[in-house]
Image (cartoon, rainbow, N blue to C red; front, top):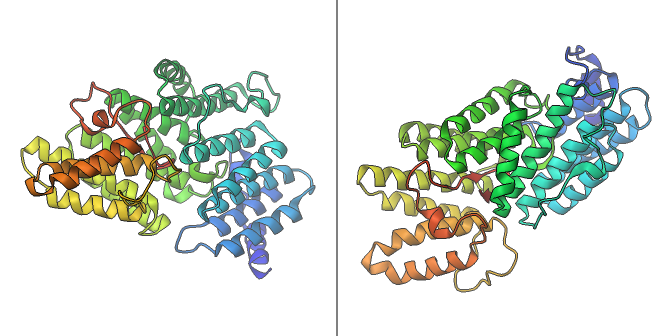
Length: 414
């Protein structure tokens, strides 16, 4: 209770921020929203200052109970706390519980902003879990984005549509539905030009990844740069209309890692190493040295060394092998001779890609070819990407050809 009282005291003493009317929930216009925002900061703050999961959940639940039905802004405040609860559950390894909380948030959310944020996060967790998501999936059952709402300006409605379309495009990309992806890319190009960066970080990153995968590196670079502009350390916890693996921390890490991959694909290895090192530091600081996100970034680092060695006609076998060993350790990859690849496996995409890359290193060593063949067979059997074969994913030729991007938000190979 003392922690809750402390959070409440800070909220009441804090100066009232200034901001636009529509995004009052993200800047805390009303007293209940300010109280909720302070609780979220306390519960989900940076790794160095973060409270224990149990204490954090008590704060959020008590806050939601106290603020329920408390007048203007209370519904928005409770929605903010519910989104934060789902994030906390996700971080605690309770992905299914987080998904259920997001579904509940959609049902009681006071506005389209909250319903879109909950839907976006729910889709992110479903993608991470490797679930099949149909192309037709939509949040329209809970929010009709075609209806003009007197509380939503047209520019804000466009922003919400951009977020929905970008998420659907990401799903289509995972499903290997090329025509559908192009449809959303075209739609995103139009809407992207008409909205600012606020509350669209996830959409911008997803759009950048579409362009990156398609080989449009200049346009992808622009999208990644817009993400960097939108997500900055000093207001990381102001932007709270997001949850799960779609919170600003995750977007910042994802954009840094994806841009590092783009620089690597462009042959700018010094800059790539710089950005991937930043991504690795972010992952370790935010999630811990043994978190799966660290393994995902290390996979990108190893692939960068592969491309660099190929470009320079040199060899970095020992460095790459050490990195892939670490990746498989961090991701808790199943043993090659004891796992049925048909079973559910977390981080299947990344593990399959890492083992495929590792196998290539072994196959060029005459005394390790048998081991390499076994590893290659395992990786090919485990590979489930619908857009590219494993052989295509392993072989990057030129920017104009389809390539893969590792999305650290959802732990998938795009």
